[in-house]
Image (tube, rainbow, N blue to C red):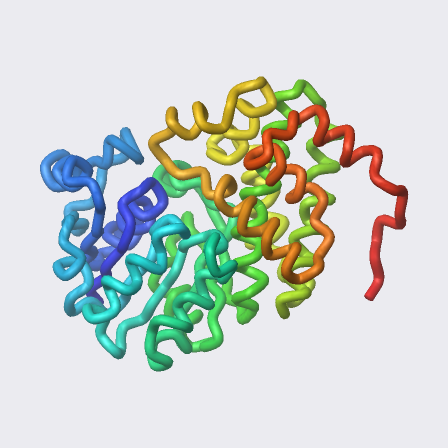
Length: 335
């Protein structure tokens, strides 16, 4: 099988290299000409994944048609805010029998749609109905270093999910299967917003108690939103829910936690983002998640405060005080 990977950031490069190391013929589409040269000439993506030697089976290109044409599997790893644009460009190039796999996380800011909804909207049913969505606690660098990692592949098609398990699994990268696409995508999106809050808490100098509370109550927000959208509650106790949430809120490699840390220490969001090469998905997702919660009537107090810090200039300490002084209530809300 020939494979196209669309998106040459750290995660796209890591997954492309994983597949290439298994012997697949992989073509990685990257936006930057310099990154393409780095991979082609030096076998390294020194911009986004420095220090990792890339397989000789991995080719890089800046031309979308060269990446996708004739490929049996197309792996989507673009930032969520450009996913629609890129899918529209790629649509004429994707074979009708190709297997679509998405590792993109986030909620589209304008439409408030999940990536699966965009794929269902734009791609023909013969592709979209067997599309597979990959998510879970997986820092790119640790996977690139072949450290043990477990993720989940969710699809309407159990056959497609099983095929992705076989294609992606290695002795260090274990893939579970699932059918709850909405739950997997909500977990992969909202965890980035809560990680901003965990970073802010750490940046303010708060301790482990505060971080544990944020993670736990963030999980409650994630679950409320997901269940309202049709997700299965148990999904949020799995790898794409609790697993990814804990990793992103506590790991030093988390871009979203790093942004939060700097916010908590008093830096402005504009200065932080201007200083970053890679995308912190939680910044855009916070706005989309806040608007989605308002649209659906879902209470998401942590997400709301993160939104107000990022977009309305609320001081982090003021946001924490407002959260702590909310009306007292029962912890577990039974249906």
